[in-house]
Each structure stands twice: as C-alpha cells, then as structure tokens.
Length: 326
Ligand code: ADE
Ligand code: ZN
Image 1 (tube, rainbow, N blue to C red):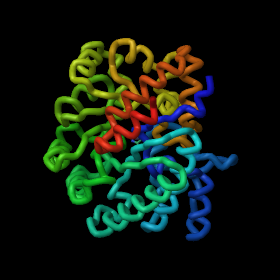
Image 2: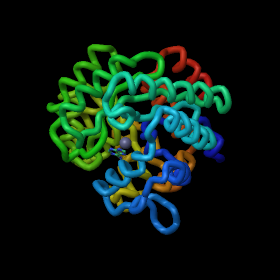
Image 3: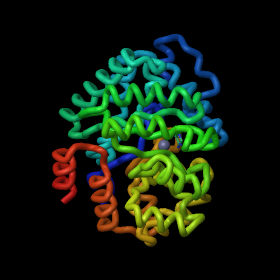
Image 4: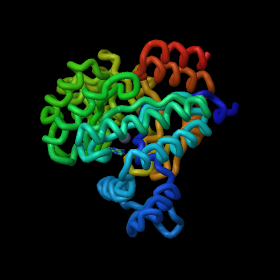
C-alpha cells in the first residue's frame, strides 16, 4: 500500500504556518530582519509549548509584509502540498496579518493569493480555497473588522470563516456577532475548538457559532455527550493528529482519539495544521495513522470522501474532487 500517491483532501492548514523555514529565512535576509528566537540550531522552528508556538508563529509571520510576499508563500506552500498528493486544500488566511485589517489592503493580498493558487492549479493540479480567520487572542473588536473583510471578499476563492489562536482568550459568544456577519453573507463556518480547551468548547462552537466543521475538536472525546452531539448534528472534525502530538495533547499516535471518534460515528478528516512547525506532512500523517491503527486504503478513501463532501467549495469543484477520489 503506497499512501504517498493517494489523492488527498486537506481542510485545515494555516498559510503562514505552512511556510518552509528556509522560505522565511530567505525573506528575512532580503529584508535585513532579525529572526533570533524563531529557529533552533538545526534551522527548524523552535518553541516550548502552545502559547510559545503562537508567539514564534507571529514572529516568523512578521517577515511577510506585502501581497508579493504572500504570492511567493502561496506558491511555495502549494508546491509542497502537491508533492504529498494533495489535490484540494483550504488554508486559513488572516486580514490581521495581511494588511492589518484594512479592507483595501486585504483585497490586494487576496488577489495575490488567488493569482498564485491559479498558477499552482495549472502547474500542479492543486486547488486552494481561503478561510478567513480572526485571531482569538487579538482584541475582540478586531474580529468584526476581519468579518467585514471576509464578507467583502467572499466568493470563488474566499469561501469560509473560522477563528483560530489561543482558545483561552474570551468566549465563543464574544465572537457570535462576527460569525453572524459571515453566516448572513452565506459563508461556510468552522472554528478551532477542543484543542487546548476541553469538550465544552466543542459544544459551545456548535451551539454559539453554528459551525458545520470544527478545527481539531478532538477533546470532545472527554465527554461522550459531546461526541453524540457531533454525530447528531453531522459536524465534521478537521483532525490534525501530528500537530496534537507535537504540542503534547496526546503522548503518541496510538493514544490519539481520532480512531475512537471515528468508531463512535463522528465524521473525521485529516490535516497538517502547520506542517513544518510540527515536523509533519500529509504523507507522514497518513503513514503514521496507518501504522498506529492498521488503517488500510479503504479508510483513507472514506476520510477523503468525507473531506470532499465537507469542503467549503462550489459544487462543480466538489464533483471534480469526488471523481478524482474514485
Ligand atoms: N494558529 C496556527 N496554528 C494554530 C493551532 N494549532 N491552534 C490555534 N491557532 C492556530
Ligand atoms: Zn489550526
């Protein structure tokens, strides 16, 4: 069984978090920017825990300053994804990082990312769509600005809205207004929950924000009534096992709850989150899951069909993806 050549659908990656370290270093050199504290001696991203990870992430992201930088980043990230068999991917992108919340600037960044994704589709056959992400630990007021940017650029490329960042900051109900703006515009909704907060955060994301997908959501396993709610409401989890293990949520692959959630009837999908930060790739995720749970190609096919059906894309793209998975 060669999982590396299997066509894959990835629903949860952060564009900046997928930046290869050498890409960030090159940009920093070009701009004469100091990145001390971001890399270890081997040149990998270095952090001790989740909150430190978020700080290092933001420090690395600071070198990305123009639409042209994001154009180059998008091409570099999609090339790596395609090399792992990914045929469709959704990336979290943030108006906070792309133009500081200014709508005019954000439109230029979206144009650049969309142009790069058109180029990658032609050269590598990979499709990218954007999910606009408010950063939870930035001011709550910022989320409305971000939702405004999201709504104004919602269309063929910007398709979804999904909060990320520190789950310890604020409550989901603080962000309900921003989610209402996105929902009323017709955007698809997801939210990071049940990663560093417990099962109740998953319930709150479903009930207070009305999301159809959850980023991570794996700590739902701590309360079977939340697992049942996921099943009843047909909510899809964007599970990133390598990320969870790298950040210490679970000690190893065998103890990761993805298989137990799937066995309980929850719809699970597989993604990398921030692949170079967590020393993972889509091929690594698949090979580690196959080893830990004796999953064969049939399980991965089922997972990819689940992902295609839960993707925030238009129906023509979904049909094309489902045909490719057959
Ligand atoms: N931003 C980038 N990666 C993240 C993660 N794993 N959780 C929350 N916010 C993030
Ligand atoms: Zn994430």
